[in-house]
Image (cartoon, rainbow, N blue to C red; front, top):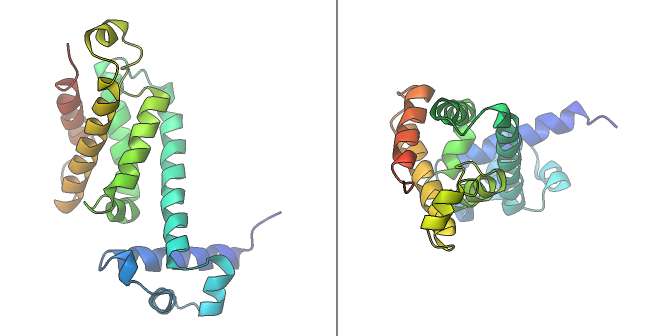
Length: 191
């Protein structure tokens, strides 16, 4: 069954209004009334789709995470065991961030980045992004618990770099940022 275009437009307007408001203040300070005014939608219509502003926030963050995971899954045709393959992979992640900058930037600020970091850790482990579990020699050299710390360290580091890149106006190219991340990550992995 096809989704009504009006519903799609309404949800998009509400999402855009929330993102805009999150740039100005915290979710706890945003009211449904403000969201509706910014989206030019009446409150009754809002409540047809969402229970409250937290429900809308959860929907937007879940949607972003689903899009990111789907995007990452598509990238696994790349050979990420080589330097060039890993740089290409990271470059495409930066491309995703640039294309979705308005939404991604809202979730990379310090007080909201733990959700995205948790997802990066989850995806990194699930898809073995850094090749940690595939490298048997490396696993012999590090204690079992270090792997979890490593993924946390990298996730928060990568998000910190992305946040700074957003704050600086995304001046550097996706490829420059990918090479920077590759340099930082490769120097964090025990040899």
